[in-house]
Each structure stands twice: as structure tokens, then as C-alpha cells.
Length: 427
Image (cartoon, rainbow, N blue to C red; front, top):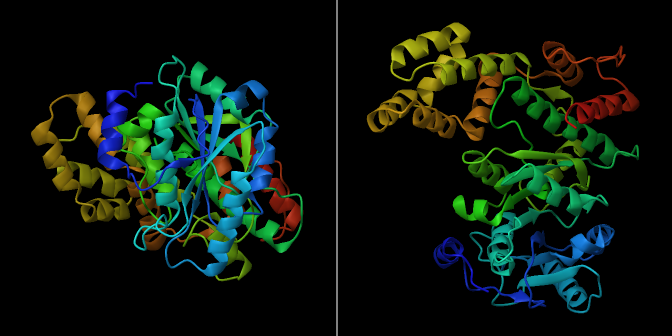
């Protein structure tokens, strides 16, 4: 089958020829799920079992591609566990099409500088491009998840349906951690998921273009979108944040709320930050888990976005003056971020209002949005009690909240109610 020129050009320029697909089924697919795996021999069968519960027709047209990986300096324990995973994958019998990439054995390991989840995802996603059915008129869908996740029974069918019906090029699937226990890890993950959902809800209130969750196990895009943004990055952490940010600069990020990924609530050494490391911090009490950004920061962001996107970009002094009226910290932040230079460059090259608005969207991206929220936290509005913050934000958004609480930090069941309410709002 002929791979389209744009895909071939990307592979020739950006992909490595160090790795190959093992257990290659010698056919092509509409959907490919790419999963990085490092010391996950116990978790991988659980993920596969949950995928096998999906519709048989969907499974027939889906490839699960496992990237078994480690760096050269990885511990012997990790390397031995990866060998168990490879042996398991060599002999697996499943109604799901399963292949793997060996980025673990001597000569195949990832280099010291780049070894990590970003490179593992990139290796798999790049090679996945060679296994799509480009003769089909259906969208070719590249799905990311993780070995310590499970998925719903309608996971594959809903992804197919919504990418077709809504014409998505990029999307995120809804997620929910298991909160059925009441152990310390569950308490920690409730706090962490509240933090994630609260931040995205605040961005939604501010009408930010970047109001979506950036969780690696929920990311989806088409093969064409993947190539358009020049593929996955090699970051050891936050690879999901920056990949989705790149996609969002070109495509609206769809939200698939009709099915769920269920990430693990475990603590983890695998990345320097993210879900697992955050749970570890909560468990060690190395941070106050019951604090969130002050919702006033999102109100300021909302006013700034209205000013920035609705007004002209032709008078830096006037723009800074208006920003200062919103909040002096905004003006300080914009000067620090060199808004004046951005304005000069954009106006020098563009006269079209449409192009100028696009450049604004590129410049004030997900990272600058987060940096502004942190700047406001440090300069003006320090973090406040988690539950006070949620109550205030919901009130600002005119969202009904009937949860009754009296203590400053409510008991476990009330905390769970808050999380379930946030899930309901974002479903």
C-alpha cells in the first residue's frame, strides 16, 4: 500500500529507523493504540483484558502497539521486568491485534539523554504511521493510553463514532480514577483529580482555547494531524501537555465524554511530575493538598482574553494601560513576556485580522496561560482552601452546588462529592 507523500516526508525527516514493529500482523488498520511500557508486566494484561471487552468489529480494525522501553542506565529490575513483558507479548493469544516495539534489549534501548515517556510515545506513534490503511476513506485514528489504565466497553466505538460524526482531528477522552476505596492513595488521587478538573473548569470560565485536560492516557489525533504538528516530542514529562498544545494551535480539541479511561491512582517513579508523582507528593505530605488557585485569577484571565482577542493589536502602550486596569500584575506579566516585541513582529508581517487573531492564539498559548495563573498566584492571589475555591468558582459560573459542608476541610465522603460534582459538570 502506498503511504501518502506527507506521511512519508514526515517519516523520512522526523522518525528513527532504529526500531521496528515486532509481531507485525502484515495488514493495515483504522485505529492504532500506542502504549509505552516500562516495568509493567503486571499491569499490561489488565489493560489488554479491558480492551478485549470492546466490540469485536472495532477490535478487528484496531492495532495495539506496545513500546517496551528503558534507557541504558535503567536498573536491572526494570530490564528483567521488560523481558517478562516481551516474552508475554511474543506468545500472547488475543482477539485484539497486538504488536510491540523492542526499545529495551541491548542495542535497542533509548539513549540516556532522551529516555522517557515522550520518546517512548514518539517511537510508537511514528511507527504506527506505517500501519494505517491509507486506502480507506475512514479517518485514521492514533490513540494514546498507558499500561496502568483500563478503558470502558464502548471505548473504541465511541472514539470511532465521534471522530466521524464530529469530524475531529484531535480530541481527549474523559477520564476517572477509581475512588471506590478509602485508603490513603484514594484520598490523594481525589485531591489530585479535583485539582486537574478545577483548573480546566477555571479555563472554561475564562473562555480559554486551551480548556481541556492534558493527560497522556487520553490523547487522540488523526495521522494527518500528527504529521501536521511534526509529531510527538521527546520530553521525559509533560509530553502530553506540549503535544496537545501543538495540536490546539491548529485544531479545536474535541472532548469525548461518552466513554472513559480509568488511570491508576498509584504513586510512581516513572516521571518527574504528573499523576503518579503528584500522588506520591500528596502521600508524603510534602505539599498542602487542600489548596487551589484563587478563582479570582480565572476572572482576571477572562478579562484579559476578552481584551486581547477582541481589541486591535496596534498600540502596545494602550494595551498595557488597559491590562493594568484589569490588574497591575497582568501588565507586569505581559511586559515580562515581551508582548511589545510580539506585537511588532505580527504587525510587520500581517494585515489580515484573521491572521492576526491566529497569531494571538499561537502566542498566548497553554503554557503562557499557566504561567499567568502562576504569576497571579505569586504576585496577587495566593492559593486558597480547595473547597472554598470550588464554591466560589461554581458561584461565578452560576452552577448549582448543593453540597453542605461545615469544616474547613470536609471529611472524605464530602470530598468525594465535590469530585463527583466536577465530573458531572465536565461530562
